[in-house]
Image (cartoon, rainbow, N blue to C red; front, side):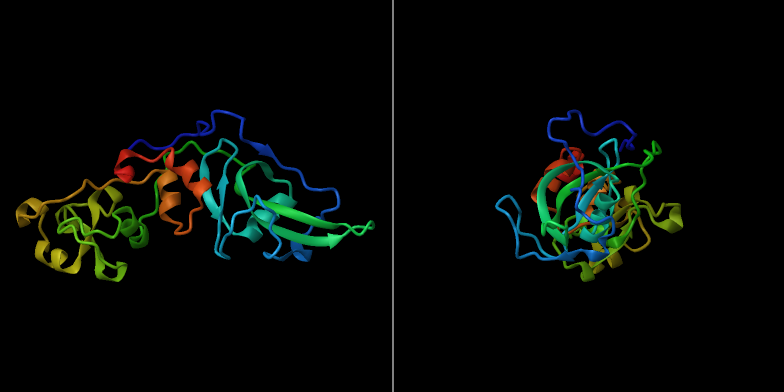
Amino acid sequence: MEGLSGDSAIDSDEHKVPLRLADNFYSSIDILYFDLRHFSKNLVAVSVNVKILRLNKAGIPVSWLTREEAATLLVKEQVMWSLGKVVAELYGGYNNSGIQSVLRLPSIVACEGQVHNAKYNAPLDNRFLFRRDRNICLYCGKTFHSRDLSRDHVTPVSRGGLNAWTNVVSSCRRCNNRKADRTPEEAGMELLAVPFAPNQYEFLYLSNHNVLADQMDFLSARFSHQLKE
């Protein structure tokens, strides 16, 4: 799979919303508190574990933010523009006119910072591997709980195989034991899908179990055919 470059992932400014803080919003988030009972009609109902998707200034996703982290970036005016619906409101102090400051957090924010052009290498972790394979054993085709799956090296490490995305699949313990220190061909076992390395968009999806609809729309636009199948 091709690595990501620093090319912009956003082709149009149509849906970008530039962000500026209200003049009466304090410069420190120490005075902020959450009051999730006060939602306006355009807010989405979210759990306390909702994350905000952070993009770099080229529009490429780089990480998930907590609401506190997103608020910090907004207060420091490091958010250049945003996308998606507002997912939470944070209430601050009152100004001399008795008006309370409100900070609204969008589901996607683009921030200032350096854009790296190096090829993206997603960290390999069993949690993300099992989710890539939809918790399916890629030998028998059955679905398992994560605790009943293991990481299998298609070409065994003892035979020169790498511990890399393109050489590992989810396997149930029975199939893993049956395959042992052999290739699928040697063990007479069919590999049901070709393992692939997730790109940056796919990895951000794999690393969050609570992706909101507008975040999913943004990420899935750059999914490879392997993840869409």
